[in-house]
Length: 121
Image 1 (cartoon, helix red, strand yellow):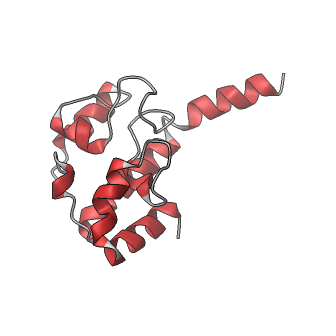
Image 2: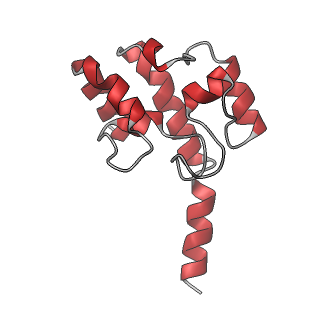
């Protein structure tokens, strides 16, 4: 069970916290289970360029880090375009975890590698 599975389990048990987790996912004083709602960029936080979270990308407000990821998110009917439409269910939260894991494997590995290589020189 990874951090995303734990966040899903927690938010299913505490559905009233979903909006707060979304609101505070990328800011100081983050919600402990906001990892599902991080921004679609290498650092996962607001202020790391003009990239949005999954909902903002879906709504067309901001892009994701790559054009391909932006297109994929916008085409995915499982991602709502408003935070009020996040369903605190396994089916509603699992797509958020899937995208966060994908970004962990792809766009979020590059900056850490560069930082680690720079520090070891």
